[in-house]
Amino acid sequence: MGPERARKAARLVRDTGPDAVALVGLSGGLAAGIEPGDVVVASEIRNADGTVAGRCAAAPLLAGDLRRLGLTVHVGPIVTVPRLVGGTARAELAATGALAVDMESAELAAGVGDVPFAAVRVIVDTAAQPLGRIDLARRGIRGLRTMRPLGRPIEAWAAAVGRRQVLLAEPRAFCAGVERAIEVVERALEIYGAPVYVRKQIVHNAHVVADLASRGAIFVEELDEVPGGSTVVFSAHGVAPAVWDQAGERGLSVIDATCPLVEKVHTEARRFTARGDTVLLIGHSGHEEVDGTLGEAPGRITLVESSADVGSLDVPDPERVTYLMQTTLALDEAAEVVDALTERFPAIVGPGSTDICYATSNRQNAVRKVAEEAQLVLVVGSANSANSVRLVEVSRRDGVEAHLVGDVGDVHLSWLAGVDTIGISAGASAPPSLVNELLTALSGLGATDVSVRSVGTETLAFHLPKELRRPAPAPVPGP
Picture 1 (cartoon, rainbow, N blue to C red):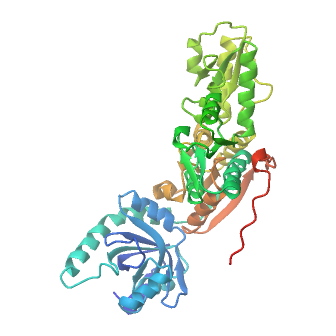
Picture 2 (tube, helix red, strand yellow; picture 1 turned 60 degrees about the vertical axis):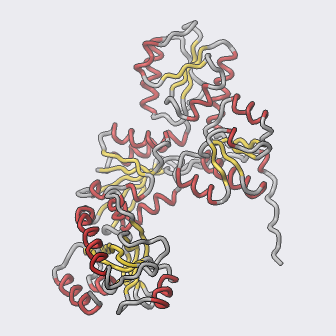
């Protein structure tokens, strides 16, 4: 304990020539919301004067493994001071944004050289719960017990350390339809003010939803949760005509953020059923896009989820059958179902142009290109994002291990051990910033060579709904 011992320890460690250094110990909590027994993983180590002694870019990866142990984990700066602090001095350190304070981390971080560094601290006291003579031993023992299970995640972190190549699939992340849908909510908030209600998730990504909610969007499952006369946005996945009717009955002002490529499928469904065809919709049950398309002609559209469903289909007239597709299907998965339908109904016809959207196709082809070289593929996206799930399935069908991660915290360090080449993509509803955060974290495990594997760039953009094309009101000047 203390800076002098830390300096000696740093010299000893440096002399061994380590590949990585991890420091585990006890410390005091600074930030509000941190309690004794919590764990702080350093994103950077600061000296008492605010200068940075070391950065720990891989902290989110290590924090993820620790959280999976059931621990309460915080990620942020740790500050090192030469002696114990309390009262005003402690409050001043907290005001700098540091989460925890100790007397060793900076000396070690600065002294061990340019190797991956991790610092994990178990909190034993805070300003509101300072250590006293009576509970000193109890708090210390509790902290040491919390440290016990930390060995396995730190071992996984050490095993993941090393130089590696990262292959970025291009295109990846947001597509034009998602960008338009998000902008619809943002512009509605600017023009009409908060709250603006949104039926379902505007796009299938938890980070996007949380960000818009923080700015005044209120997400609801059904329209009966929206006060009469309010403004409501329909999500990018589209809705059935019955939902429009309900909005009209309740006097809601509707802004439609349905992706134009989804609307194309709705238009086809209306056209084909109107001429007397039975429409077979290839897609996945329960997906909002599928529910909306089925609702265009209830009873006239049948869902087909796989080629195994084809044999049991019963249609009134096999000579008047059309198929449509959910826009976020895997290309080979859809082709298999179409082949089965064509064999069963030789007269079947499909849409004039493919229903699987360009963004879905491009991202799947880019993942395939990455999978030709990668040992592991990580796809950034939410679990309810169909196009993100398909990217994982595409990689696995090509024989390459793949995982869907909501963000960097979902990556298991054990996946990275012995992996020299990682492919990264992101579903069409995932923010590009999440990919950047993952890249930064991987760089904290060792030198990282990043290159792009592209199947082309996307330049398509969609117009906003007419309700949002007028300029937002100018801000009211302050006094």
